[in-house]
Length: 249
Length: 362
Image (cartoon, rainbow over all chains, first blue to last red; front, side, top):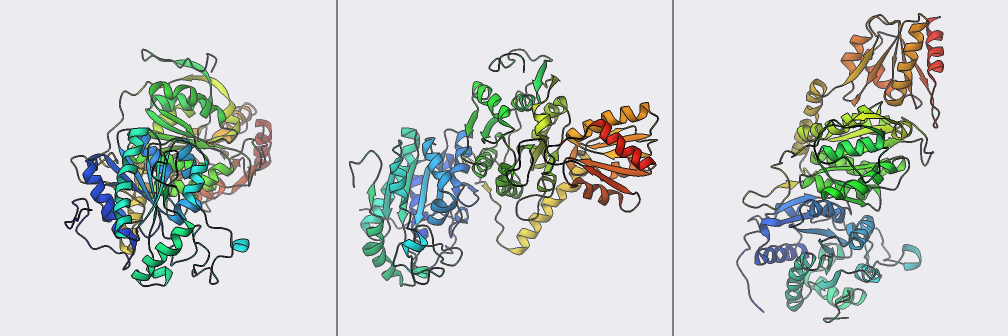
């Protein structure tokens, strides 16, 4: 594993506004590093979804559009179809992609849009103060579900990668996590593969990243990583879900 | 169009006069204006527009695909517009309601796009007959927040093609979404149309998202996180109104000069009223017609001028009275303003309109 300490040039020299222990700052950095490594910064266009990371274009020095809630895959579709050599990616949260945006994502995948979709799943709607999200697992108490999710009443959590894989269409689908050093390194690698995939294979790449939210999980940053490792990955196994299954599941 | 659908006129640019349906003439004019992306939605009565482009847009390398719903369609258009492409989407009825989210974003992000509403009866599902009841939704900015969009209302197939062609230029010059409002009847109507020449190139946009290349990164967003920044942005959006009022406003004024009664009507109703004016004049009734072509900005000043001598104003609409409010705002309490409207897909006949004029004169 390599050690990297210098700040990637694509990451503007301003402090992150994220809470202590939040996964977004790690992910922003990883994406900035990978886009530099791939040499696509001059033709990369990002689409920021709605969530805590909705201002991510303040941090990443790239062309960026900001999408209506859930519509990032559709906005990316228009951008990519107008500019077929661009590397177009979306960066969305679990509420954004699995709630309002589920239709947009499913249909972008069925059309084999040549885009990369990053879905940062922290199992809560962080931006509006930590209320329940479509991905909140049972057992996690949120401000709008004080007893935790009761499936017969509140519904079951959405397993996005499994759902998308069930479509059986050509695409790259993987779930990774930010809980350990090894998994962060794996995430970095998966980001690179997911960014390259649409151009190489003419299909959509979906990367779901399980990410800690200590603030709204009411945990210390350390405990949040522990919860992510022990509980969240049980609900959401880390694996490749598409037809190329040489690596997992 | 009489000739085979896939046989779009190609080759030398010539003055093509064809017999076309309004929705098809609109599509062809948009193609000639440089349209490269169309996102289709499956709502009647606008299907012919989508059908025409499905045959013809891919021929020039453009994108014409089905969107899962109208919110997605307009978001795809937003993406295309953000990349600098000429984009269009079209819907009707509840589909237009679902597009309002994207319209607010397009307006806030100052992105040019053409949105077509082939207006049908509502509210809710309503029916697929002709209506003008989307007037408020479109001219007031049906999405959230403080914004307006340019709304153009043609009343013939020729005008539909001309306005569609012009709409892209307005949209790009002012960086504002433009809505073309047809109704179900005009949409289906066939007339001879002289098509505009094909544009060789469209202006490059320095703000477009194409990858930052050698320049500073571009960001297209509707987020202004401080109240100061958002207020400044919103005021800036509204400075467009006065510029548009000066340079874009369009209307038709028919025999208003000496008219005792001036009818105010747009689109299909304007057309009915025009026939009513001919019939009324033959009988010695001094009727005139003022037909706004831009519904926003509304030609308020021109209307006040055109009706200076009129004794009364008769607003005609395929709704329960929506433009009526703009007419009253334009004229204040200077003139008595009367209203005659039909809804649900009913269209008044010229005789019906003339009868209303007779009532006002007696």
